[in-house]
Image (cartoon, rainbow, N blue to C red; front, side, top):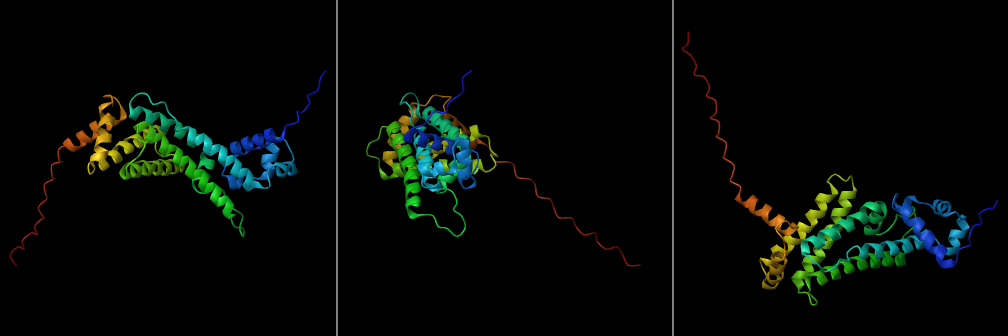
Length: 260
C-alpha cells in the first residue's frame, strides 16, 4: 500500500496556483467578500503561507486582475477572414463568455477593484495599477478593431467611434450582469449592430468615414448582421403611419325641459 505524498511547489508555481484559486473564488463572489482564509483553504495551505507569497489581499487581487485582463484582451483576437460583421459577432460571443464566467470579478475590474474595509483608504498604487490594467484591455480591443478595418493611422472620427463602442460594450455587460433580464445572444448581436450604426452616423457627416463604411457593407452577405440591421431599418422607415383615431365628440348636456 502506498500513501500519497504532497508535492512541494516552487515559488512561481505556488503563486500561479493561488492566483488561479483567487480567480475562481472571485468569479463566484465579489472580491471584497472573499477572505484570505477562504483562499488558503481552497489552495490547501495555511493563511500565513498565503502571506509568504503575497503581502496582502490587494497584491493577490492585483495579480489575479492582471491574469484576467490578459485573458479578456485575448478574447478580441480574431482571424482577419470573412465579413467584418461575422468577426465582430464572434468577438462579442467570446467577450460575453468571459463576462458570464467571471461576473463578480468582471464587475470589480470595471469598477476599479474590490471594496476596502471601513476606515481604510485604497492605496494610490493599487488604483493606478487597476486603471492601467483596464486601459490595457481597452487599448487591446481598440487595436484589434483597427487591424480588422485595415487602418494604421485612424482619423479622429474613427477613433471616437471605436472607443465609444468599446465603452458601450462594457456598460452593456455590466447592466446585463445586474439581473440578466435580456437574453445574452440578443445583446451580442445588438452590439454588432451598434458598431455599424455608430459608423454609419459618423459616415453621414464625413467623407473619410464614408469610404471606410462602403467596404464593410459591400463584403457583408445578405444574412450577415450588418445586412440584417439595414433591412430592419428600411422596414421601419417604410412602415405606414398608424391611422389617427377619430376624436370622440364631447357628449352634449341634455337641454332642460319646460318648467312646470
